[in-house]
Amino acid sequence: FFLHGARLSRDAVIAGLVHWRLHMLVLAGTYLLFPLLGISIEALLPAALLPSGLVVGILFLCALPSTVQSSIAFTAIARGNVAAAVCSASLSNLLGVFLAPMLVSLLLHSSADGSSGPGSVGKIVLQLFVPFVAGHLVRPWIGRRVERSSRLLAYTDRGTVLLIVYVAFSASMVEGLWRLLPLSSLALLFGLLGGMLAIVLAATTLLSRRLGFSTADEIAIVFCGSKKSLASGVPIARILFAGNPALGMIVLPVLIYHQLQLLVCAVLAQRYARGSIQSPTRA
Image: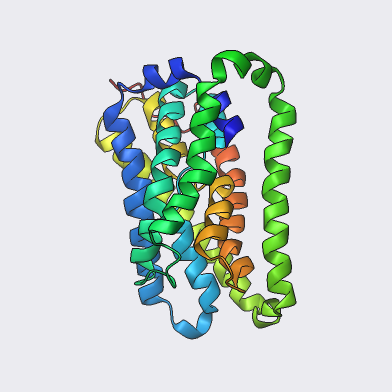
């Protein structure tokens, strides 16, 4: 998160701040539409169809912030409003440090054995927010070097996340939780997450057009409003569900959704770039 802060361009953030309506719509998708979908799944899905750990994982996924790097990358590929995407995705991540624990507590109807209390928020702030701010403050001195080493830093980010995921899944393996996960439940999970992604993509597209946003703004709204961050989600899960033997199962929906959003949004970005699904230029 120190490196994420160092990569964040202050000029891009300032340029994107004027699009406050866009940011409100993205945040509404991330922190309102997703939780409503999670609540609906929990209410309508028979308890016997999915292990409780996966249901908790779906609700946890719905509380997470948007991604930063992939939202910006797909917006750029699709020739959207990159400055607004930088500002919106970064704002979502910063707010997620505080909102995610509260939403998890509300969605799970409890404090998860105290894991969503003030102490956990403090840990998340210390481990995610403080390094992010520190990295951004030293950007004037290390920003150019960070940008030149972007590929190496991307591998570092992915490697760190993979290591955390490996530890979580190993703990679940030791507890024998994976023997409790039939293939039918896994297939259902893929279907639910794919449906959730489709609904959010359709909703953000429709709302951006109904509210009169330009095509470039629509692209930023669609890609920022439909994403969920694996890089933020896994560390937050380790704090909120510390000591929970089902941690691996809880983060599984985040992992699956991460892959689905990358595959679908890569295709969508190319289609936007070719202009095959762009509507006529809007004011």
